[in-house]
Amino acid sequence: QVQLVESGGGLVQAGGSLRLSCAASGRTFTGYIWGWFRQAPGKEREFVSAIRWSGGTTYYKDSVRGRFTISRDNDKNMAYLQMNSLNSDDTAVYYCATGPMGFGGRWYESEASYIYWGQGTQVTVSL
Image (cartoon, rainbow, N blue to C red):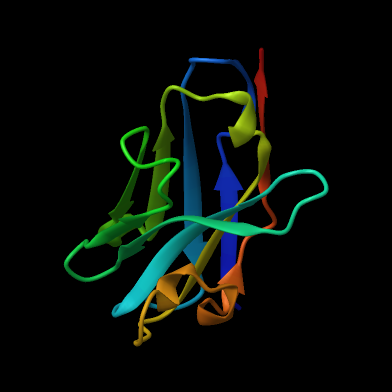
C-alpha cells in the first residue's frame, strides 16, 4: 500500500521559512514525478511545485518561484519543499502527491496527473 506522509508544517511569521517533507513508501517511484499542491480556506487546491524523479527537472507556480525550492532524495523516497519569504497568501494546507510522468502542456499542474496523495500539513503565516 502506497503511503505519502507530509511533515514540517506550522505557524510562522511573515518573512519566515519552513521546510516541508514528504515521506513515501509502498512502491518504487522510478520515472514518477513529485508534486506539491496547496489549498487555502475557501479556495480550490492549486499546484505549487513539482520535480521529476529522474533528472530532477523542476516546475513552479509563478508566485512561489524564487521563494520556494523543491528537491527530492531518491534513495530515501523523500521530497521536500523549502519555503522562504513566506507571506499570508501562502497560508494553506500543503499536500504532497506523486504519479507517473505525463505529457502535453503543463500536465504536471493538474491534480489528475497524480495518483497518490498525502493527508496534508497546515502552513499558517501570521502577519
